Image 1: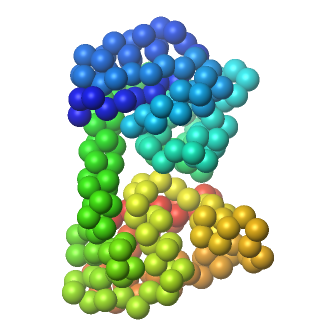
Image 2: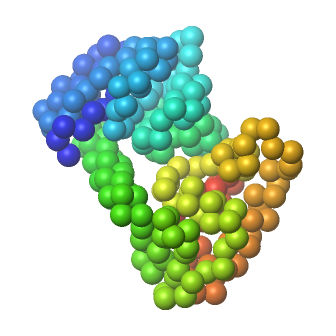
Length: 229
């Protein structure tokens, strides 16, 4: 995937140099940042993917990710020496798409980068066509309709918007609060617990035709993500 731009964020110069050299040999354009503030500035260049260290002074990677998610939807891959499950959950809850532990295999990092960029390219192409396809499920963004195995699913407007939001950001975890704010707005008077009820209804409608594929996966303690597997 030559010519894609990757933003590499780490406060350790040796790691930046090591990864940058490897990625540039693969044909990627690499932007670098040694701090969270610098990362926010560099992100304005709209990178295709961001590699983000967790343990940084002043502003750690979790906080950087939260702020990045206000302006960018590209994949974010965390690099971290923190091996606990709680740390990985925090990373996903902040809006990260992947979490790779230090020390890491360079070959694995490159493979994950390629996989994320390939997925983004596929989704971008589908968005331009107005259709998102996942096995037997088709989401018609322009027609505001969802069908599965030839059957149209009777989704309400909000149910469709939830499906569309999750499907367009496959693999990214959204909390109930994030989904509610994106669909109802920050000033809406209501309770984000309504998201749970909407998800239940969507799953019930999918179950009738999706042959045991739920598509919407619960990430315990965080929220929901789209997982067609």
